[in-house]
Image (cartoon, rainbow, N blue to C red; front, side, top):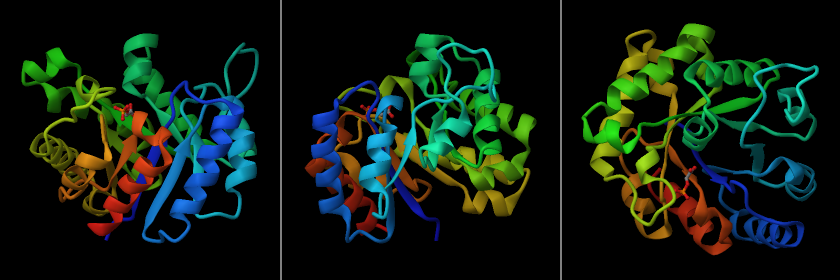
Length: 253
Ligand code: PGA
């Protein structure tokens, strides 16, 4: 059985006091949850707070982006080694908001994935298509091309130390997720694509879904056979709702 993961993606939200309440509450709600890994991906300035609060708890933490460079004169960038310093296990790479709003290309996303792995972090590599691509029936082609860039650069075996997140851009940040059947068909296409290179890697690959997961729809989405967990944006800011989502992942495993 593949390990299930539910990761909160706070995006650019939070402040010291609200984070503390949220993190304390998550520890309280989720400390007895043993069969689902729960992570929070927080803004860089709050990594120290996450580390201090979550060390020696069941929860893990990570960042939402990383530099493709290892170190040097790159003003404003944060390296994978720095994230290591703060005890991160995960880093989100190639999120569709970074691709769409900050011009992150497949190549840059793949370099970030490589930099993360070099420092021992587990990239959560996001693949996604736009609404136009979805409506044109090109979802699989677009998403598999994104995945191919990391396989080409780092090899299929690198996926043993990564999570793939299918996060259709058109389903993010609203109330309505992508239809569960569409999600399953995309996850299955991703797994089959990896299988053409390495069956064992494909069988063990954690493929999680992100895009408007709420407590109300989590069970339906997370019960799809190729869905191994979720990335939760807005709903991860509410401890009760997020905990409920994490418990839905467990109920089905
Ligand atoms: P959302 O965000 O749950 O707010 O749609 C998910 C994500 O972008 O990771």
